[in-house]
Image 1 (tube, rainbow, N blue to C red):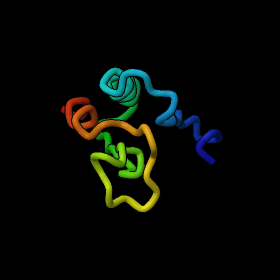
Image 2 (cartoon, helix red, strand yellow; image 1 turned 135 degrees about the vertical axis):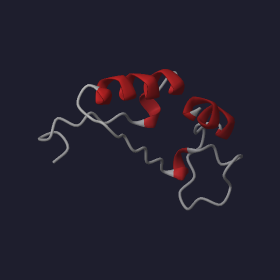
Image 3 (spheres, rainbow, N blue to C red; image 1 turned 45 degrees about the horizontal axis):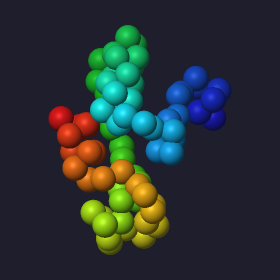
Image 4 (tube, rainbow, N blue to C red; image 1 turned 135 degrees about the horizontal axis):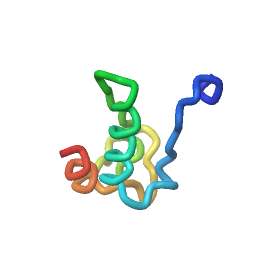
Length: 71
């Protein structure tokens, strides 16, 4: 359904620079959207920073990197 709607999905293991990935998404979406929402699955955060998630992602995104990128 996402492909049919031309939604671009970026998987965590394909992200080299989280901040730049978010900037690219905002720029692209800004061409056709007035408001943008972001949903982040906490399971993508490194288990050292988010030990209480149900499905921890070994080697996930560091919490500090996520916070910095969202700023």
